[in-house]
Length: 192
Image 1 (cartoon, rainbow, N blue to C red):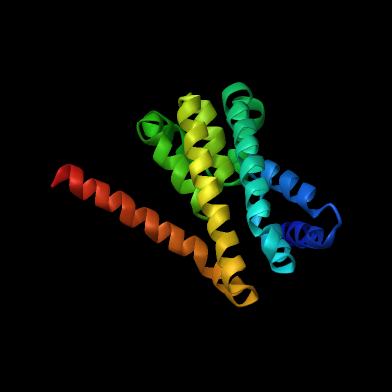
Image 2 (image 1 turned 90 degrees about the vertical axis):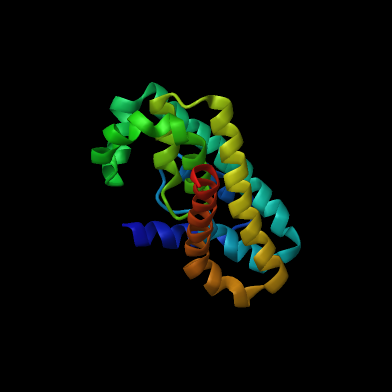
């Protein structure tokens, strides 16, 4: 099923309304959809590199708006909608212990999930369910999603198709390593 969704999402890149399709995919991916918008962004940017930053901007805005929808699911519909989504992604068991400490580190969680391969929808729902400050959530989501999508756009704009494999296979890992180093640096500064 996931493979069919992936292939369907990829097929939208050649559609005349691909930018609208990207906005929809970026929106729903931040709330419940399992396929990231990068799958659609990458072929769109390769096909039209002069539109790379416009494509990244659309993905960013739609993703943040979708994140707000995920936040609303967590805040208003956690039991009926949010819990089944967390169950689907295998995150429901860890949620209770996670929620007790979440708001202390919520901005970091949003930032890290927004740039790494961790399912962003889990964090958007968790942010609403735990009552993370809405302004903190919005600012963190904008920063994270803009960083992720504009880095992808800049790499494709600068290097073109040869960088595609790196983005698809290693960029998530590079973002994760960057986040670990950043948090480790803050930890060292604070506690040493």
